[in-house]
Image 1: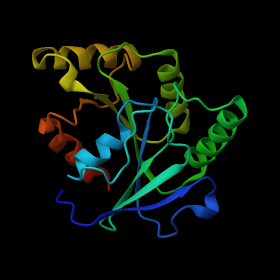
Image 2: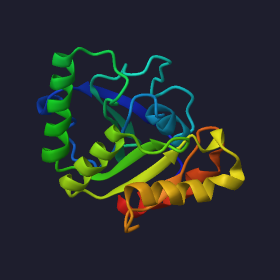
Image 3: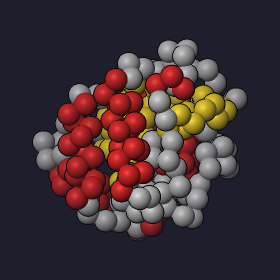
Length: 193
């Protein structure tokens, strides 16, 4: 897909702030610092439309990126490293849950995990949470440039076995550095939207 005019549209914490135009939404979930913003920037060939941060846990709202008025990339706050207080974590958890379980425009969830590490307890909780939402999703083994290219396929298979032993959820490698994986993801997104 050739993206011509992507734009950041809004940060939201409640349904009344969500976009009203009924475009399909591709939702990104994963722990803080797994590379959700870098994924967006890589897919749309922009350096910094989605703001990346060296400090994990900076995203505390749901960020909607309008991709050529065709669909949205929706970046949810990450889990795991955030310096938020317990109360803030509960508030963020509530509005994420409200969004995932009530938003009719969600067409696909992209669940990002770090290819270098076995899934954490939080990753497993998020995986089960996504399964319970009954929404279509894929698993993205991100940061594939951090391991030898000859090990990528085996590592992706290992991660899929760890999270999804029956193998019914599509699992792809991805890297913001090695852009060789982009086309497969676009193909999947095109089929969905």
